[in-house]
Image (cartoon, rainbow, N blue to C red):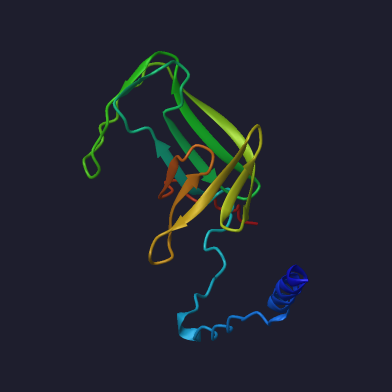
Length: 175
């Protein structure tokens, strides 16, 4: 009988602990509008083929490359067909690292060949996607002033710096 009373007391305590209301956390107050960040559309847009946006990547290291290894790439970003030019040599190539700010002397590269690839380009959610013989995904990076700074390849981490275009716009013939 004594065991039955103890058993019933434990059962009552057990069930009463589940029937208590659980405490809820209060909902935090909304953020003031001044601290909210306003997102704007990308400032990078695809241009005409006559006015491409150029990005360049160069290998900057003390190294010797095997024949056929790309050491410089240039992306001509346009709508329609985007060009990716990759420079490589048919002979082993020795490169020297250069410090930023110093003038870079162009070395004569023996048997240099430029491989040109054509891609379809689109910009989605701050990423440039180039589709062609292979697919490249490049994240758009902006500086503090919301100006285009560079592109970062999501596959290998290479950084393509924005460079000014030396190409002159193609004038339409007068009619």
